[in-house]
Length: 636
Image (cartoon, rainbow, N blue to C red; front, side, top):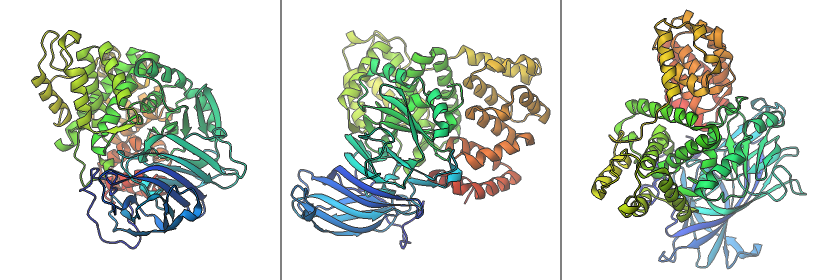
């Protein structure tokens, strides 16, 4: 990550704070509401404006306790503090402040000295063109090719690169914003807007309001040539005009997804749920920004076969956005529960068979990943002290977390577990919690309930329907949450369809089935992934060509299948896929796809040279987060 201009020395990270990834001091002075006004400058690639924080001094805090905010590469032009209620401009007067030394990961603390009675702080600032949480795209990087595009990505600690903020998931706040953009462009935020999704104010600016308290990583902004299409009474899609119809078709089931979760786990509490389809440089599949999920265009397969990603981002409206991890060490509380809910949505809308296939694939990937991850990376409650929290984004918080939740469901029965989960979301609504708080709640409201209430349907968690053993459960919880690997007893998903694919793949590899006999024309995405992952380390060019001629794998529109195929093509030097490979690496910024492709390329000297050459050309079009990941992978 970029360091702040003029700061060459490395500062100590904020390891003494409650959140080791934030310099802020919410235990003494806490932000409560943000009034944000920004001008978007595409020529300079900066945001310029003011952030006005309403603050609250905590009980017992020293009278002279300062407000400490997180920043990264921000230029602070001036700071004022407002006394009283801060209603009038002349209530503000110059404040004393200092910007600390820069750490490559954490940025620099902004310490503002407060007078007694200060209620608001106004900061004038501008961002850097290299802000890690912003990507500025020239028209060539968009679908329409006529207008520039800007989007933010604040998770995990990138909000501090575009707003001076207490950048910790344990701090929640509300906000109002006014965004000024060049004429003809549209600004959208993950918030309510008074004039519809893409309509400006009379002066051409765009106003937004977030009334529900959110953590900093859910702050989100995008600007571009955008249009809106409703999907249902409270759902819609925002995209570049040329992508709007295809996006609306792909996401037609979103309203049903909301109904599915509400029926079992309580009301959707965010008002609207819209989806913004971003340019292909977006580094993730999706980002669950409340009210407006940001999504990659790589899920537009044309047949709704990849909308499980939307089910996942929607599920975050309960697990993550509503009940949030208090620190990035507790990240699994967001992603484990959400991956579990994603499976429940898939099962309800698309059938148990598809949900089972997803679970089998996830477990297989988790086990494969764990072979490569050091023991400390296999722990749900991972220690990330002194490290970039992005390092904790592996399959462990997602898939090991979801496996733990499914194991609890199987042990206690779905009906009882659903009641527990609904109560959990209600109890902690709009709060940020730690793993310890979750464990305490789990014990009190599920594990230690009277045995008369227990209706176990299996022994996956080491329980029996006729015997209750709190000590055994405690050991089991420790092995799930604090230890590497997988506990001996866990849910084991099964899929008859994938078992059949295994048999077909073996028959084809052994020469007992011809390519014409595979039946791949009717396979789902999951079946194709299983088949391609079942291939041996090496396939002949002739056999690769057989598959490609029969099923058009190099030309498929399904990004998940193409990505698995291209990994196989690199490994086996299948040159007819070279053009497609280069096209993907040059135009797609999704890390899920980039990392496996670059990883496979770097396994040979000639592949590494090719990877570095492509990366040198593609890097400018990647989001800073993706560019950082690939740069590290290739040794840059």
